[in-house]
Length: 569
Image (cartoon, rainbow, N blue to C red):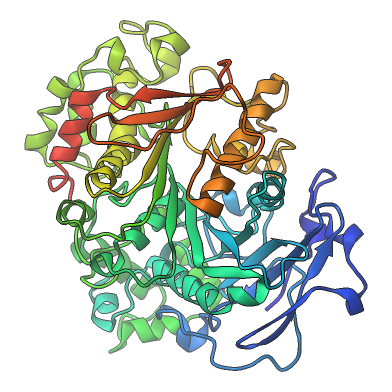
């Protein structure tokens, strides 16, 4: 496996700065796990130890390509030098820009406060997003040093772990042949094996395997949801809590079956020269990487998604929630105010357009035509339903906002709800009904670089959760700027409050109880059936955080939840 040095990934502001803070090899932090001894690197800047690019599975190459991940079955020949980030898994999209990729990518990274050997610290395991077709644990925006430092500052020290998993067709190839071989949903199984590796080995790093919180955003949050529901809600005791940022146990997409994936698979097989093979899946394992990569690197790279396989994904998530078949651990679950700006289609100029898009196979959550025709009644073209709201962009009922369509705001409200927000509410309701703690939120702060007509859309809470006030990784490669650039001090205060709340929940299952909490912020209420409430994160208010009733767009969101089976999820 080839590695990329941290120095090559760094910017002048990057806190890791390993090239300047390495100890002499004789003084490097070391741990001994089941497979042997691992040597890491120390940061004087944060007084933290990093163990980077640790393999948790056999490389999924050659005969192991397109197979479920296999546990490591050998010991290291010598001390494993875990001092450099590994390449990201092969993906397709903007999140891959600037980072090398490789098939050999099933690794994890550990960031811990120095001197925690034998302390049994809680840990947060980060699962990155990117639609399951791009992204990686190496992404600088997911720098764990800041939140780990905050955990120490508030008297709730934690260990941070980030994991990599196979993406796009490499991790989610689906077809009759794949289903028949039992190698479905490989990327999710990668994550699961990483969690088992952590359970078996984290004690060597000073972590407590009984105090693991799984945590992700977008597809990473959806992944967390899949683990809460995996194997029909079987509790394997590999995590005790879960955090979902814009992702839920009921997924954002409609589940497709092999009638959808088979033509795509057949196209790959034919183009790869495997059409006349008896075992086409096995034939694909021998196709040169470059050739397969070119075949997968198309506009349909994101079409490869999890499937209901009767195993890891036992059945529709809505059915499992209704039957109580989920791991009953405390959760944090939230979404951003204007999610629909990221997920709503353009060119919605009429009610007919609205219906057509809602029943189109091109959207993530699609409805049969009969049900789509009901939507105008529960998603009226009225200001209280609009995304972004009138307070952000004014009244655009009869004008075309920014070239997106006369009814774009109506459409954005629906698509934000159907992809992210409705299932967030549904999860919070299910957890509360089961008597399991749930802390739910709405993020309502527009960072720098986000135009006013975009509002508070998808992903924008991430820099705040990671307390990434330096904007590490928000560079030209991602087409964005430091989210805190030119913003008032309240933005940095909110980042500190949110990051500390996340760390406190990971450490104690209580997001409120930590030293130095912002005095004017309201306490984060537990969600209840009788009084459903979110905390709202808003840097433009004096409190920074306040509770609100979780009742907005009540009729439309409830309609989405009631019709979950029509959405096939």
